[in-house]
Image 1 (spheres, rainbow, N blue to C red):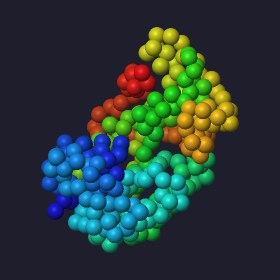
Image 2 (image 1 turned 30 degrees about the vertical axis):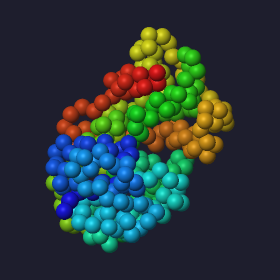
Image 3 (image 1 turned 135 degrees about the horizontal axis):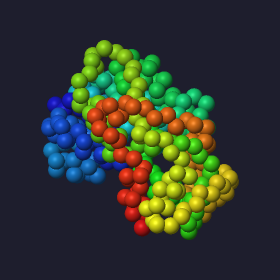
Image 4 (image 1 turned 45 degrees about the horizontal axis):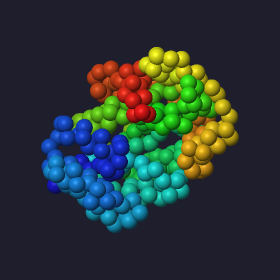
Length: 292
């Protein structure tokens, strides 16, 4: 019977976490819970238990979580109201399945944030507190790997045209996944009902003006940072194929950065890994290459 179960293992973060767990644990101790088991063939080939777990079908979740000593619930990407319902089903299913300890991915932003998804994430944190489960809330920072998306939206020849922002402690997905994997597989007093929170951020907080400077050094030509208004950003995003609601959500993320909500550099992830974390300067060449 597997002792560790990861949801969302076909997704970007979930698959990266599973890969990291397999570096330190045998496949027989790990199961993945996925909406579409047919899309998880690679995990089957590696000897993992693949279980059908659909956040919209609670019975499948209870069965998928059975036997788990530790469960990683990766946040869904649904709109707030649906996300809250999906997470509540997962929390209740974890309770019914007798899960020993739940790990859940949340965000850095707190109450009052302009970032639209914040309310849903904070409600799930509150639901976990009230569940009686032993749990660790992972407040994940902004992925560096999201930068190519924003650069595609903002780049116009030698200019980056985006709304005002503020310093952000961007974290490399690989560092984040490795840190989460170490927490999942490391020693812990899971038997005592408690709620712990861990902020997992990158090693430095920089804004898009500095990112433009670094990009210019890499590309060998000046890249200028232009600040544009919210409406112009949304219009540009829609013209590039982003839905209006999603574009508005991204714009609220810039307001969150401008308010300083993502500027804090927490030492937890570096302490967990016992090494220096990846930096924007070191990773941006790879990320820029993906734009080509």
